[in-house]
Length: 158
Image 1 (cartoon, rainbow, N blue to C red):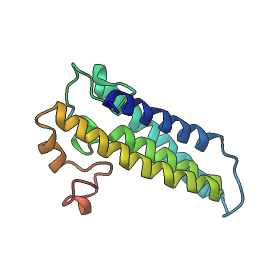
Image 2: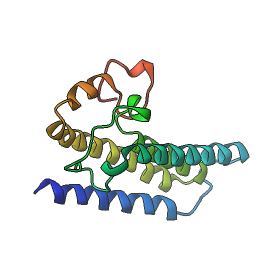
Image 3: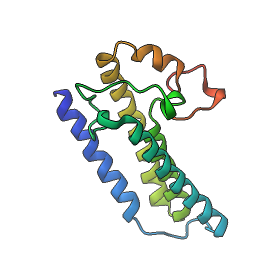
Image 4: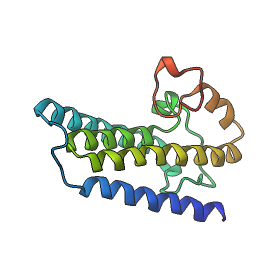
């Protein structure tokens, strides 16, 4: 399968998972007091802000497919200084926010699948980036994948 088609398959699966998360109804599998709802909304808001800032930094290199733009530039500043995939980090914050405020085991399960999906998608995208940008491997070795936690500094797959 060519990489362009595979990239668009990733986009399609991502869209299905995210739309499913948004449309799933709330439930009462666990209590959702005001502080849980507030925490979920805060994660959603922070995730959307991170996604917007990271997307703006990409500028003309931003594209829906995880295949790098032919004329794009590798970004290693701004949020990209702290994590390799800040847009995905933002999406993951939104996913967790949706799950915890839902009170639904089904939503929690779809969120877990979505998180696993983004780990696989990021790993595949990183291979495309390494093939496209000679300096990507060095950048990946010093920059965490999703979360800028000092505890995780020793492992580039974090």
